[in-house]
Image 1 (cartoon, rainbow over the protein chains, first blue to last red):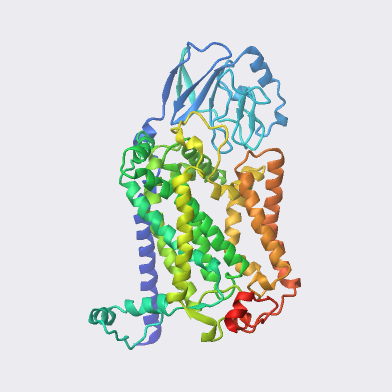
Image 2: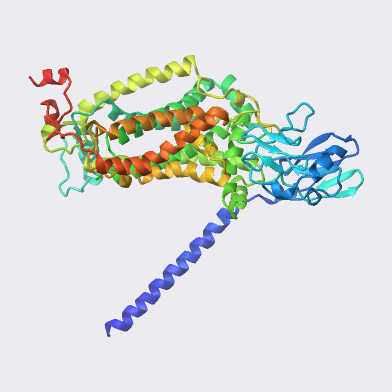
Length: 175
Length: 421
C-alpha cells in the first residue's frame, strides 16, 4: 500500500470526525444557553391593561409592565406646547413629539433611564423634574423633557415608548 | 513536581502504602515542607497564604448560609433577616461572610501591590500573574453576584446598573442583557441564576488558585531583592520557618477581622441594603461595594456610555499584559529609583479613584475621577514602558545572602547585620 492515498484517507476521517464532534457539541450547548433566555411564563406576562379614567390633567401614574415601571402622564397644554416647539436638530436622540404619542395629552413611557437602568424622578408632584420639566435620573444626572426625550446627561437615548394601544377612551393596553 | 521513578521510603507503613500507589505524601513534603523560600521574604509574602485561608473561610461560611437562604424574590430578604435573628449563630455566619468578602479584597489588593512593587509578574512568572488577574476577575464577579442575594435596595439596583453595562454593546447588547437576566428586568430568574453561579464560582476560584500556586512553585517565590535564588544559602525551608511566619500573619489577621465582625460588622456595608428591593424606586445614590469602587469611578468618569464600559473593563484587562508593558529587566522597585515613585503614586491614585467612586459623580469629584483615570492608563501605557528605557537602576546584590552583607545599594537593617556577626 502506498503512503499517499492512505494519509489522504486519514485526513478526511480526522476532519469529518472533528466537524461532527464540533456540530454535536454546539447542538448540545444550544439548549443550555437557550434555557437562560426569558421563559414562556415570563413572556406570557407581556401585556397589562390600565384604567386611565381617574388621571387628572398634569398627573402621572406608574404601572408595572414586564417588571418595569411604565409612566402614564396626562400632559397639560403647556407641557404639550413645550414638547412640540423644541427644535429637534438640537436633540441628542432626535425625535418629533408627534411620533412619541398616540394622543397629544397621553404620554406613555418606560420609566427606565436609558443610561444604566435607574427609575427617573418626576412622577410625584414633589419630585425634581429636572432642568426640562420632565424627568430627572438621580443616579448619574440625566434630564428628560416633557416628551421623555434626553436633553442633558449621560443617557444615550430617549425614554422608550412601549408598544400600547387605546382599547377605548379610558383603557390602555400596554404590550 | 517532576515524577520521580523511585518512590520515597517512609517509616510509617501506612504512608509507604499510600506513597507507592499515589505519591501524594512526597508531593506535600516537597511543595510545602522542603520548598525553598528566599530567606529575605518579608510579611508581604504572607498574603498569598492569608488569601487562601480567607477563600476557604468564605466557602465554608457560604455553604452554611446557603442552608438557610431562599433564592426567591418574595423570600430572599426575609430569609436573610431570619438568618440574622433566628438561626443559631446565623448573625455570626453572615457577618463572617460579608466582612470576609471585604477582607478578601483587602488581602488580594495587598497581594497585587506586592507583586507589582517587587516585580513578581516578570519573567519567568508571567503566567502566574495572568492566573492571578484571572482569579481577581472571578472574585469581582463572585462578589457582585453574592451582593445581589440579600435582595435589598442596593442589591437590586446594583444588579440593574451592572447588567445594564452589557446593553452598551452595539447590536447584541440588549439581547445579551435579557439573556443574562432571563427576564426583561432583574427578577426571580436573575436571582436564581445569580445564586447558582455565586455558589459554584468559588470552587472555580479554588481550582485556579491551585494552578496559581503550582505555577509559582515551578520557579520559586520572588523576594524583596527581586533576584534569583543562586544557592541553598539563599533559602530556608517552607517548613517550619515560613509556616511559622505565615501563622503569625494569620493570627494578626484573625484579630483584625474579629474586631470588625464583633464591633463594627456594618462598617463596610451600605445602610440602604437593609431596605427590601423595590423595582419602582431607585435609591437617590447607588453605591458599589468599596472594592469595586475604583472601577465604578472609571465607568462614571467617561461621559459616553459605551466608552465608560469599555474603559472600565479595559482597566482590568490591561493588567493581563503588564508583564509585556514593563521594559525593565530589574524586578524589585527597591532598585528602581524612578519607577518606585510612579508605582507609589499609582497605588495612591487607585485609592483616590475608589474614594471618589463612592461619592456622587459631579463637580470636583468627577474632575478627580477623570484625572485618576488618565493616570491609571497613563501609568500602564506610557510611564511603565518609558521609565524602563530611560531609568538607570541601582546595583543589584550578587545574591540573596549578599543582601545581608550590604550588597547592592539597599542598606541592610541593623538587626540583620547583628544576625550575621
